[in-house]
Image 1 (spheres, rainbow, N blue to C red):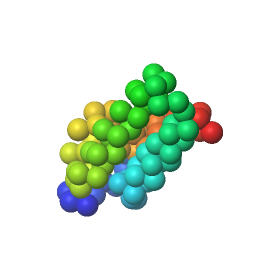
Image 2 (image 1 turned 45 degrees about the horizontal axis):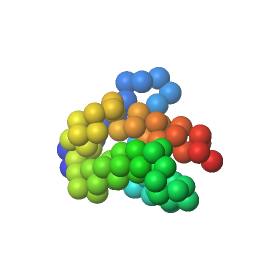
Image 3 (image 1 turned 90 degrees about the horizontal axis):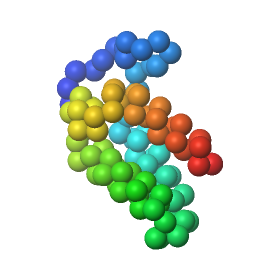
Image 4 (image 1 turned 45 degrees about the vertical axis):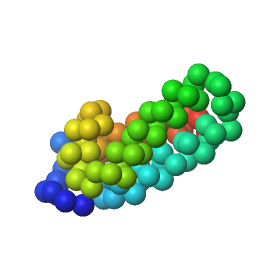
Length: 92
């Protein structure tokens, strides 16, 4: 992982992610496995699969966390992880 290591997110109760790439790869893979059980023509599956695959591609191709945050464009990487955890909790 390149770049400066941050010490805080600046957000109360949200600690800095130690291994954000690994965490996101696992979470996105689990989401893809779950939605793979849905009918292939389901709109929800298509949309979720598209977004998840795009983000997984970014995680796999961008090693710099700061650049990854910019490319995903949904806040700090810790916020992205929290969003994915929330989504995963909703589908389980």
